[in-house]
Amino acid sequence: MKKITSIDLFAGVGGMRISLQRVLNRLHLKDECKLYSEINSYSRQTYDLNFPQTPLIEDIKSVKKNEISYKIPDHDILLAGFPCQPFSRAGISKRKNLNRSHGFDDKDQGDLFFNILDILKAKKPKAFILENVQNLKTYQNGKILDEMIKKLSKYYYVPKPQVLDAQDFGLAQRRKRIFIVGFLNFNGKFNFPEPTFKKTIIKDFLDFYPPRKYIISDLLWNSHQKRRIRNKIAGKGFGFRLSYPTDKATVTISARYYKDGSECLLYRGVGKNPRRLTPREVFRLQGFPESFKFKVSDLQAYKQAGNAVPINVVEKVCLNVVNYLNQSKKYQKKVA
Image (cartoon, one colour):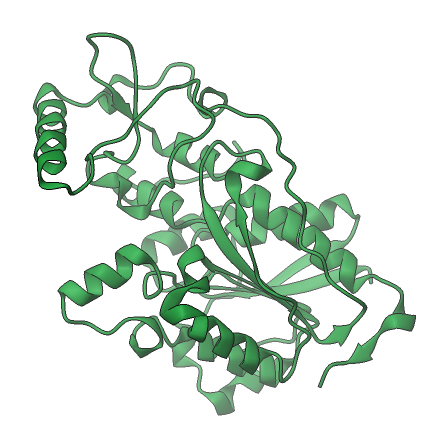
């Protein structure tokens, strides 16, 4: 196998593609992404800046079953970090408050898994890599994940999905995500990557001279502290989280970080207001290289970084998937 082709669905800004590219470059294999799909225009702006001239289908739901054969190109690996909001704790809570459906019943995002399934059935790539929030594992007592695996296993060898944490793979962020992989041909047991446990601290990912605009104002800092007191009295948690540069990891940085940065405020010293992470720092905590480009507003950059995949983790998964595909053919047999 001298070249591996892929399609990048629900691509965001291309984190899964970067991870696969790194692996293929290391293994001296040619890489060709034949298509990407992303509905958010700001994310497409960043994606196109880093991966110009990649064919695009904005909304994968616009491709009907009978159109897949000619609208979706043949490919070796399907990548899909499909929308996690319908399965995440925060997303479910928000949908309940708005009296909206969640999980598979969310017709805007929750049923996108079935679009992936239709493509897999029609195009039969050699492998797929899916990523989602940890909560998918226990959502509805695991019934939804079991249903996904059952449907995928009709056509693919699907090893037991695994939850991997970014902080175990050289990133100073606690970020647990579930990975589902599958193979058209069975080459023996597939193993997910073992944690590297590379020691890092938050300071390793910070700017040397962050702009002063990221220091929060007296008004916002006072508001955070008052809210913490109110929440503690009401038993609703403790509000903002203060992180120290010497800490091993931040909490999970979400797409809502742009609102007030309360989930990770950086300590600057006694008597000094803390600061938010810069967008570049959040991208670093996700494993994105310094060469990664973005020219959107801070608001959009925070959203994009918060919605991205942890590159270090996905890269290790991709490496094991590609190595599995390259295993001896004598063990190979069709699953379906």
